Amino acid sequence: MTRASGPHRLGLAAVAATALVAALTAPTAQAAQDAAPPHGGGGLGENVVVFDPGMPKAEIQSRLDAIAQAQAGNEFGSARYEILFKPGTYGTAADPLTFSVGFYEAVAGLGRNPGDVVVNGSVDVYNQCVGGDQAQCYATTNFWRSLSNLTVNVAGKSGCYGNTDFWAVSQAAPLRRVQVNGNLTLMDYCTGSPAWASGGFIADSKFTGGTVINGSQQQFFTRNSNLDGWTNGVWNQVFCGTTGAPAQSFSTEPGAAPYTTLDACPATREKPYLYLDDNGRYRVFLPALRRDSAGTSWENGPTAGTSLGLDSFYVVKPGASAQQINAALRAGRNLLFTPGVYELTDAIRVTRPGTKVLGLGFATLVPTRGDAAVRVSDVDGVDVSGLIIDAGPKNSPVLMQVGNRGSKARHTNNPISLSDVFFRVGGARDGYATTALEVNADDTLIDDAWIWRADHGTGGGNWNTARSDTGLVVNGDRVVATGLAVEHFQKTETIWNGEDGRVVFFQNENPYEVPSQAAWMASPTQKGYPAFAVGPKVKTFEGWGMGSYSYFNQGVDIHNSTAFQAPSRPGVKLHDLLTVFLNGSGGIDSVVNGTGRAVDSTFGGPSNVVSAP
Image 1 (cartoon, rainbow, N blue to C red):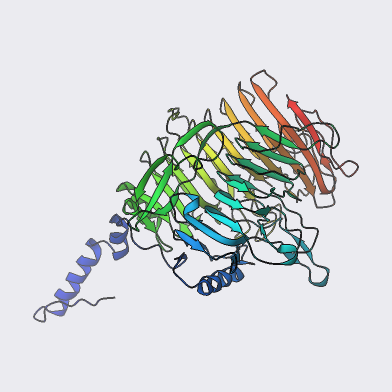
Image 2: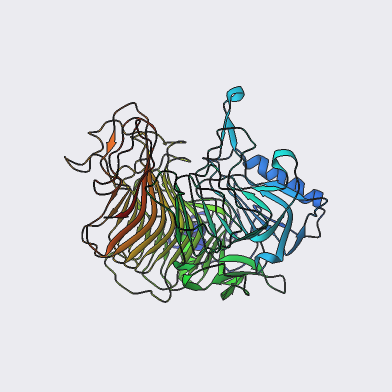
């Protein structure tokens, strides 16, 4: 703080008057700071950890182990990290680099392609164990972590864990742009039992030298990848555009493998990523749109697309205000959020076509005054990726709005894309939102979204706290969702009103803590609410590999009349639907529109419907 003083010859009264006028007419320092558009580029902050292949392996190992230990139990904490590896090789077959990835750790290579960064060793996620001597060990809460843009030559460890990469995760834990040479398991079968897992998402990746072990994964989605085998399915394993995927086999026949396999993915745009150019400068690569695609984007040459220098981005750091962020957007900047939690007194307003908004280390946005965290105008080519959006203490009508209600601009050739954007109502804080995500813009792409009303944590698991009606509302036409999970909302969880929508993989759990049937009725005659409802006026829609599960845990006989609801007309097609009774009381009375066997304590399911309505 500086101290100002007037000339000595001014009298005390004149000095006081001058100071008063200045105070009344000059903007505050904060207001002046907020009004000026921030500069682009700059450092990435202390929670972006960058390794160089020239560093001693022991130094890298020590730093990775310390971060993993700190983040292992940090499910709802505020610490976040982006772990970056410069191009080169780390570890050797004789002295491998093996490390674990905890909550809010995003691990990535800084090469242009996955082969530019090579880890000889393993990058692992293991079960969490709770309960002391009678511990239960599982991966069902291994959320919010990622691995991308590098190659792992699997080596190291011993015994049960030896020469295997463990990626035992659930939702919001994507594998993107990786090549794994050797054994990969999506289940931790070594660290205790029952070793449940409830993932997951793989995209734009290649696996050689070992069959991917699905194990206990209840459901999993893999797209645009290359597999060297897949061991098994549990309830809902979905593949699109994936070489080596199991053949389509989803059926009502007992014992049939629960595989839904599409030869191509309808529309995809890979997530933007940070890399180093030939001069050692940071750039952001923007992969090109692909339609009806199969295989990775990089095996037959570099990924198609364009790039932007870091100087075109406002590098946002914790403590930045919504006013500063919006000033940067008005000045034509893109946004790169560094790891942290950002409390916002106003919505971030993205209005310029082609704006890129990236989060590092699961950067988290929290609206504090009941507005949205992010509002995207109905413009071409906006990318939003790598963010968590948390509901704040005052109810937000919507946490993120994409496109303006009623606007019908077409974005066929340059759609808005959401990649690895995750939503929470409750868990880290007792937050409130009527709807988490509303998509009004036509042609929007949603890739790997977990929209979650918390079943545990702060506000979670209580019917009267962390209140939220609906996870996702889609009003735009030709919207495509690949890898969509919406869970525990208190009314219809997903509402799809747009025409010609497509969903490849959907996962849902009904709310656990429904206190009474009377508190959970869609109408006087319909018990509960659908997990996914196609609007009654919709003429065309198609979905594949869609599951909903129940666990009503209040000891009350709660029923959901139907998991899926859709108009019965030729243009609306649902493929490979299922319901499962996980535990508890009550159950789901039908799969879709009153058809499909009920699941309850007498028949846990899965109850499969191959085609509907």
